[in-house]
Image (cartoon, rainbow, N blue to C red; front, side, top):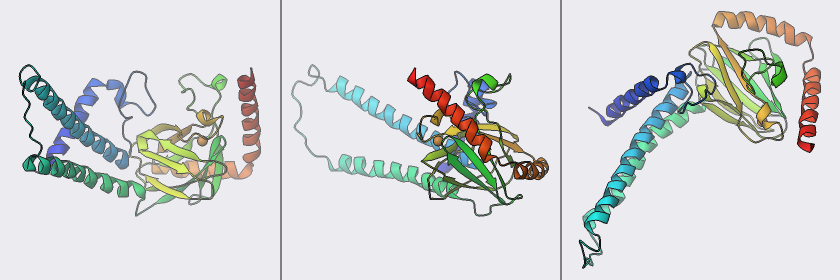
Amino acid sequence: MKLSQVFAKFTAGLSAVAALLLPAFASAAVPQPWTFGFQEAATPVMRDIEDLHHLLLIIITVITLFVLALLLYVMFRFSAKRNPTPSRTAHNTLIEVLWTVLPVMILVVIAVPSFKLLYFMDRTSAPEMTLKVVGHQWYWSYQYQDNGDFSFDSLIVPEDQLKPGQHRLLEVDNQVVVPIDTNIRVLVTSDDVLHSWAVPAFGVKIDTVPGHLNETWMRIERPGTYYGQCSELCGINHGFMPIAVKAVSKEEFRVWAEEARKKFAAADSTAPALAHLESASETRLAAVAQ
Ligand SMILES: [Cu+2]
């Protein structure tokens, strides 16, 4: 059995154990209380990130246990009581070669899947649609240039307007709707300061930089609503510009895009968005001042 196959079996086993131990984990597209680890992967990229994480976890556990065992052995075997006259040995060629070559080999084992993943995450070779994301202080706007060229703003739902079952600090007025099983090219930029568009279940976390276009991609495998947050400290309302992505079937997406094109073309969505934003900022500034 090849080494990579051994690791694949290991990681599959670990995932299975994790799924058994953490039932709440399975349904999570939002953070759940009293869980650890990742939200369930919804894209091939996130699955590969989990695999790399498991591989690194195994390697670091083995190294840590090995060093611990060596330390305990040295403390026991070479204590002043058991070894009153220490040897004055200073060199051992074999051991010196080993402790140089082995770490290099471990780093190579880590580097191969790591670079593979880095390039896989970078961009998709066959994009089927493009979603443009623009960060603002403090909300997101989204542009659908392939599906009728419309755009809209997406603002947090304030806590006092949440409906039962909605998630505090994660709900938005206009969710980003995208089709499943589609290679979506995501282009991100910013209107003012650095933000970061991050959705854990997709394995996407990418900085939005004013005057610069960054690219990533996602291929969502299951319908559902996925939540994320701005992940670059961007000002006073940094914690209040969540991301909610609704993944639907291709057919539902077509219908939605048709309606959205009319809805958002009719309304100048910028003015109410800014009014909402200013009042939200003033409330928060007032709260800070008290
Ligand atoms: Cu931000």
